[in-house]
Image (cartoon, rainbow, N blue to C red):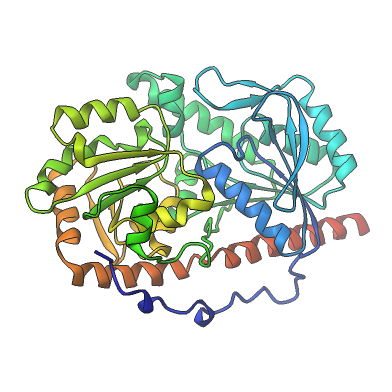
Length: 421
C-alpha cells in the first residue's frame, strides 16, 4: 500500500542551494560551544535538534563542543560523531521518570573553566534552564557572544511537574517571565518557526526573534520499500497510521485510539506508536476498552538509525499534539513521503499544505474522517506524498546549518569590532 512509486522521489540535487549573506564569512572552522540541558540518549525534540546541530556543524568543519547533563550521574567527556561532549555531574529530575538535571552547585565555575579550556568563539544555548542560564552567565563574564534558541513551552512540563489544571496558566506566566529574563541576555534569539517567535512576543519577550527551521536530513529520510520495513518491525501488512514521539499528555494520543474504531468501519487499519512515555499503559488500557487492542502496536524506543525505516512502514503520519513549536517527527515523516493528519494547533498548520489534513483538537470524528480518506485512496496518498516531499525540501537541514554559521560569523565580527574600539 505504498503512498507513491519510489521513482516519484524528486532528486535531491535539484534543490536550490542556500545562498549565504554577502560580506559575511560562513563561519566554518569556528569553535562553537553548544549548551543544553538535554542531549541524547534523552529522547525529545530539543535533544535531537542539539545533536543534529552539533554533528552537522562538525561535519561542515567546525570544532564543536557540547556541554550537557550526564545521563549517568558522574561527569565525563566523550567524542560522539565528531563532537566533544562534556557531560556534567547530574542528579535525577524528581518530577520526570528518566531525565536528569545538572547539579547547580559550582556549575558557574565549571562552565567558566570549560570556556577557558575550549576557547569558543560563540556560545549557543538551547534553553533557559540550569545549563542554559549558567552558560549565558559564563559567556557574558568571558565577553563571548551568545545565541539562544528556544524549544520550550510550559505545556511540555505540566504533566511531569504535576501542575493542577487550575494553576497552569499562573505557573506558565511565571515560567515565561523567567524565560524572558534569561534570554534577554543573549545577542541573538531564534526559534524553529515564525509562529513560535510570535508566541514569545505574546508572552512579553520584546526582542527580535528569528525563525530558523530545525531542518531535516533529506538524504537519511526518504521513501524506502514498505514491505521490507514492515517485515523488519514485525508489522501486519495492512493500512498503517504512524505516530513517532513521546507518549505523553500533551501529545493527546488518546484521540488516535478513540478515532480507530470509526476508521475500522471503512478500512482494515492499524495504529503504530513509536516512542516511550508516561501514557503508554493508559493507551494500552484504552485500546482494550474500546476493543481495538489487536490493531494498536507499541514499538517502544527505536534507535535514531532505524527511524527512516519506521516511517517507510506507514501509509499516513498522525500528530495530535497541541504544543509543537515545529515537530521534527512530522518533518521526518514528510521527508519520507507520508501524508500528514495533524491537529490545527501551534506550528503544525505550517507543515500541512496539500500534503494532508488538519483537524480540530478533540474532534475525534473529524480525525477519523481524515485518516479514512487518506487510507482509502491510493491516488490521494500519492498526491499528498509528493506534496510532503516538496514541503520537506524547503526544510533541508543544510540551509539551517548555513544560517546558524552566518549568525556565528556575524556575532564574531561584531565582537571583534567592539574590541577594536
